[in-house]
Image (cartoon, rainbow, N blue to C red; front, top):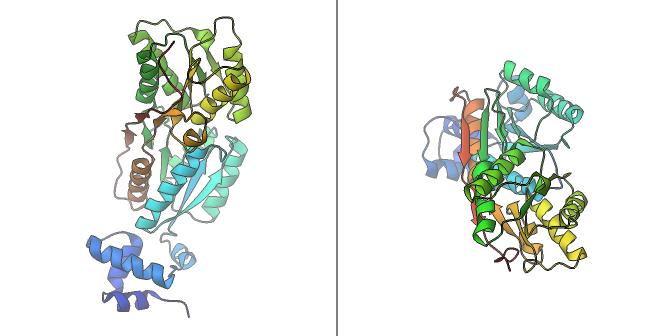
Length: 332
């Protein structure tokens, strides 16, 4: 027989009202009691009847996470930490990959609304502007994650991509590099990282060369082809800033195919600090996203929105950090 809320209350020696408060993540309950009840639920493999709750107009304890590119390992890291934090709040996460396709965005949102998810964390460019505006108009809890839409009054949680772009470029400049290229990405975060790159160059007295900035597709092969184009010019750069780790690894592969040693002949820096950094040879210097803190913060914001606790729109930015490894070195 499946365990019930009464079984949980009896074992925990609390009232069913207290168990209900833990399930609904509301009311004043000590952290010790909350953890004990959650542990009992886990041990008994207790699952709330979300369908019955939904039919009564209550929470289903499900949040949809929309990501743009399942192949980019940063989204696996995001999912891990969001899911981990979600469990602490009593919510499960349903991941949907959109491939930045407006039609797929619409299909996923429609399906998730049919499943009566309690809210959406959108970690993609979300090109379907009409649909996003409808969600906001219908007062569906939505939080943008790892990107922003400054033109909309909407909650967002992200790292400061602009400061990250400055940090990456400053690192290369500090190593004596002046001809620094960038493999760019057509997204809001990518444009902020590019803006940071441009700002850092100008602050160092280096006039940005537009020919050294090339936009790339999202895949590793695309990044390698773009990196090759940057390296095949007559006056090649001494360093490349990849807008994410995939693009940086693509640049490393392009250099290797051309017989260029990294970092002796070409320094390369990435962004996101994913697992790719430590499996790359040499290991990749990168800008680290505070993924754990981002996961915690976005769950706090979306749960507050779902429970109607916070009606003020927030734009939260956390600080990224430079992680130096073997792919960058002093210019020779």
